[in-house]
Amino acid sequence: MKKLLTTTTMSMLVVAGAQAQTLEERVEALEYKSYENFLKISGELEMRMDAVSRNNKEGYTYITDATAYGTDLQTAAASSATATFLGTECGENWTSNNSKDGCVTLGDDQKDNSTYARMFMNLNIESNPSNRLTFYGRLSMAKYLSEISSTGNRPNEAAFSDLSAGANADRANLWVERAFANYKMNDTTTLTFGRLPTIDGAPLHHHRNQPMTGNYPILAFSASFDGVAVTKNFGNAHTARVIYSPFSTPNYNDSISKQTNSDGDTVPRLSDAFAAMYEYNTQVSFARKLHVIAMHNSIGSMPIAGTNLTLGIQRTSFYAELLGIAGSNFSVAVHGMSSTTKSEGSVIGIQGSGGWLTTEDDDENTGSASGALVKYNFDSGFMKGSSLGVEFFTGSKGAFLYDPANNDPVSMYTTYGSAYRVFYAKDFEGGLKWVAQYMNQQQDYTYAYVGLIGEEIEIDRNTSFVSTSLIANF
Amino acid sequence: MKKLCLTVLVLASFSAIAGPKEDFMAEVKKQCKKDDAAAATLATGGRQGNVMKWKTCTSATVTVGDCTLTCTDSSSKIGG
Image (cartoon, rainbow over all chains, first blue to last red; front, side, top):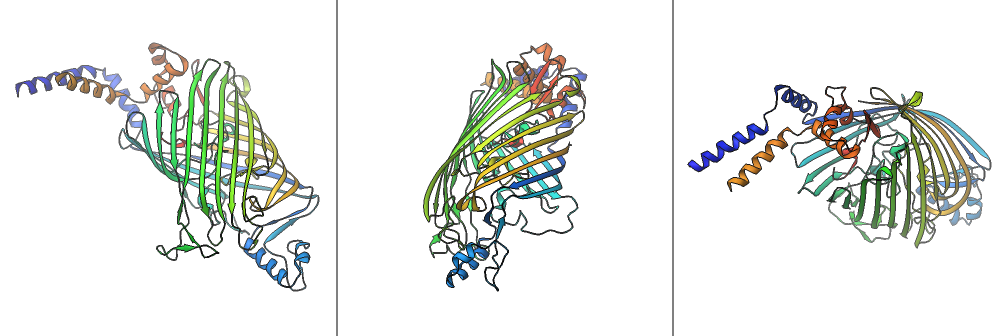
């Protein structure tokens, strides 16, 4: 007992000694602590204007509603009028009583242009209930300014919309874009689960001169994935990570009975998807920072409800950026990916011609894409606080290019062809940012349905846009 | 055992006072190769001071004195 008392007393004396700060230091420490509440909320409000023009030099038809298109095609086939149907422009009558629906035909040298305005709001939530546990959340809203009426399918109600919920302009609803918890199992290992920060990945952050805004590089996969991950740090610079983020195919009518596809075969409600990542993030002698991400994504066999179509993807990607090269204000980033897409079955309605990147019922396609970016940060003169950059991208046919969370009028990263962008960002004192960009995209290929399914079509379409945003960080 | 208890208590007392200022100074020392005194000089207080400027940074970098710090966004990273 005496020993215990002695130990306790000595311990308290040591603690008191260690905390023997001046009153000023202690007040200062408390001041900083007060800034970090248990639950912190911050956010971003953006108002954006886009002016886009498209020149479709060669006419082609793409499918917008496979069911409607397929019904019409089957009707035409039944009356031996398939050739007449295929030769008719979408929206026109292929017989006196039947119009060709579920598709859009763009004419030769058809020029279109449009201007629209949107606003985006992100509310970021952070909580640190303990030294081990951290929670991050993001509630997002994206909408057109004062929407009065609309046509077409809303982006948050379409198939696959869960992979980009809240990112595309819709109603003034809030969507959960991110909600994940990190639990430190020990000093080097962290368990993460929830709706993961996988959209808005590199190199998007350079356009707005921000810190990296998503963990999956955009060529690894641009989509919101729910799942569980284990991250292991090796020293100060190396990080390895494995992620399991399965896809769900729920049946809201019956949550228990087995589901079947259009062939009557059983399909799983949960299909596996894995990713393995390696990150190297360090200071180097020739740059302020070097950050490399290498990644492999694997999707086994993802079914599409109501069809017998399944998707399997093996996708290997890398991203590397060098910031502040050789003491200058120049930064560069390069990225690339190679994908092998395995398609089985087809979409009902375009039976026999509606697989992933193919018209075959059982097929495998390989393709690649790559890009590079150079940026300069101004730190003096009237341009102080500005960054100016250029970016180039090219994608080959056969690559699985997917970017549902894209907010540009057309996505640079789904270009089967080439695209370039010039971007400028200005940070004003006090949390206001102005962003402007010009992008040009030359598309040489597309696929008939949603740009990824069915017939590969050779096209010659040029799209360019100018956009400007005001962003408040609060 | 006694030594172990003392060590744990001493370490706990130091971690209890670690906060944004200490994090800021650690980053200044790491990223800009400053010594303790120089890092402390840069760690100016208040809502508009350098510590909070770095802590609430929404740009790619923040410049404090002659030191350019890379900002990070933990809410965009799996595993923090």
